[in-house]
Image 1 (cartoon, rainbow, N blue to C red):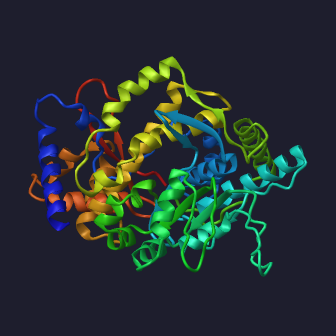
Image 2: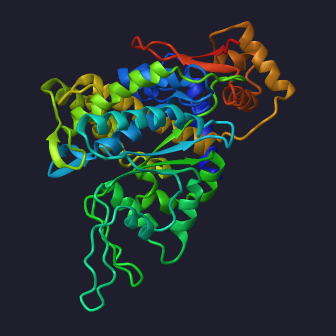
Image 3: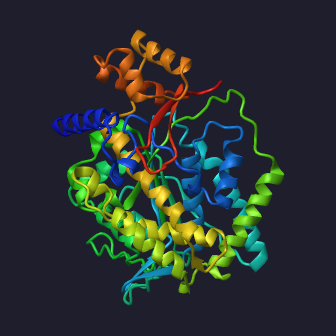
Length: 459
């Protein structure tokens, strides 16, 4: 791993130096962010309803917008079940994303990011029960995952009692929708390594939408047509230490959209979200769920979502970049980027209560895929451990404060390019503080090289 990091750092040095030369840039150079900076979600990644929930949650809290949005998306996708679907060849894709929120323990406010989306979802659930006069309640399991048999039991099928003894009967679970919040995702990685534990293959089957049939000596439970959405929490250090190449290659981790988050601001006295705002958002979410499910969240493949002709043409333009080969662990972790782009575009379409995926939905989905890629680069190549500000880092901060919008090459020139590694390390510290003291912005792409500029974060 250390050799890989050294190699990547050497490539970064070459790329930075070439930025000052007159060579024409490639598309890859335009699109790839600096691994020094934490990922930034572009505005198109937040469609209207999602943006409204993010705004409400982040108005008076320290939650990261991406973590809030991931929770809102997970809850919505769980609520719509297996009703909406999209065909990809002979396969079928449902709205069933798995998210892995990566950030510092206690500092990234991963738990805080759940609060507003869960309250909006709870109120939307109550609206739908009243609207349809039923007792359908969206189940949220926050107790974590330990065994594949335990997951199967949560959405188990009915079972007839034993013919001889009359015992062992089970009414099963009618509602196959389940939202799982795993606040200690390292537990999943640990359990998956235990001999005889089937948690890893069970999670892979859940994402694929396959029936669960453990059929072990101790458990013969089955669960047909499960719809389980998982959102996990982990620190960058834990993910780097606990995950193995096999976790990425065997399909466990690459079924999760990895999202790096941090605490974007300090809010000493957070205020509750106004009740009227929560209620209004709940109505909008309930309407979107109702539209997606057509009033029956327990249906299966009854609401097909398709692309417009314009979206199909746009997808053909995007596809070569999305499906390109990536080396190493990063390549394994991004193996399902194309499927996720299609899945998320469907979700954004449904949030806007439409049957057809449009160009804007694909743009939003690609923004999430690119944030995913940036997160992997940042977490695995730079880390995000707590650091103290040394004298040199304070000097770098002073340079940025005195010259907002300064480029990396210009910062390095202050020290005559003799302390490039120290400059990079200091920028990393300043970008990843809670809250960060500087931010990195990229100039608009006008056909030339895209300059990356550093700005101080205002109080």
